[in-house]
Figure 1: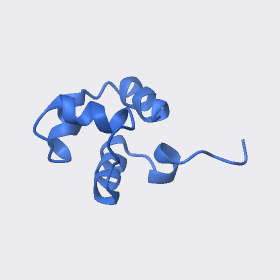
Figure 2: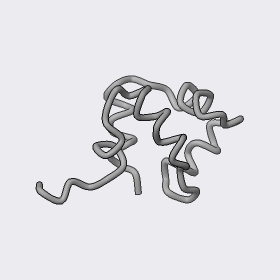
Figure 3: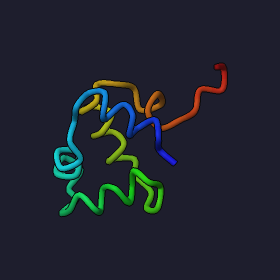
Length: 67
């Protein structure tokens, strides 16, 4: 579901463990459930990820309808 997020995270060489810790998850598995779309991200988690990746939240989590 969030292939774009995974790709950006990998390009910026940010480890799953780092993001999981930043958004308050106890395990990498819990993060993978979110990144795979099984469990939704909260708005606050999205904001934290956006800050960590230094990108607008819309660019990470939403499809650009103009492309």
